[in-house]
Amino acid sequence: MILNLTRIDPPVSIGVWGLGRHARRTILPAIAQVDGLQLAGIATRRKDVATELSEVYGTRALGTLEELLAIKEIDAVIVATPIGCHLEDGTRALLAGKHLWCEKSLASGITDTRDLLDKAAASDLAVNVVCSPLYHPLFGMLLKRTGQLDIGAVLSIDAQFGFPHVSGDHPKYDPQLDGSALSDVGYYPIVIGTSLLRDEINLVSAVLETEPGFDIDTRGSAFFRSSQGAHIIMRWGYGQDYVNEIRIVGETGVIEAFPAFSKPDNIAMTLRIRRQQSVTNIPVPEVNQYAAMLASFAVAIRDRDSRAASRKSALRYQSLLDAVRSHVYQP
Image 1 (cartoon, rainbow, N blue to C red):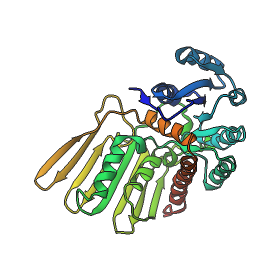
Image 2: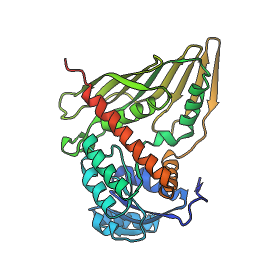
Image 3: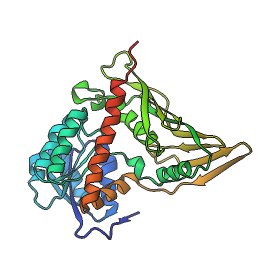
């Protein structure tokens, strides 16, 4: 499916820095699905990888970020490098006058995040931090049903995301690159779970655990409370069976969504409403949430208010992660 961006004129020109597995499998195919985006160049330190992919996507292959930023027609740069590289890479992109689309999280902490956002604001540049589930129709369906009190007042939200360890020397396990289960998988249930209610949300407590043999947190949980008394519990981690779901308990029913955050090709997305004597399954449209997110970013680039809103969202996401780290239970 091609997402039509008839509002975007002229089209937005995009460059991609970092061509790891995620960029190859998810980002580049998503760009190709958005009518209104032009892939002007791709770059990685492994020039052979860039060259091979450039033939697939019909674009320029480059070996450095400097070469990518030197392409004048590029409006925005996608930074798909490890978190520990985001501050330097993002700063260089913003100082070159490029809008920034960054893999989560934007930086290692709130100080670096504010530094990047201040640079973006000074030049009125958009900054989008990946949170693709927000752009899937499922999120809108959940938001509508909680807002309309389809299950009465919300009493609790339970959001979980986790999977087995990946093999090999993956950057997500490297503390020098700011690897962290919180920043990698905890990010999604925390951001989505705290976005489903319109009440004020406050963090009560959090736990981060480090599995023996690792130098980073490998699993964790957080407990938030809304101003109306709803309990919001997030759990995440590596080294466990696959879990990817949201469960919302209300006074008169329960809403269940699976998969809620990432969408494996072999699993159909389901939304179920359970009441005391009935179960209703609601169809969820099939949408590439990465392509939908990129389409939204393209619109933000061309709209001043949307550019400001993108920077505000980026600050909120990082503030949530920093709040969890600062509230970690110490036995």
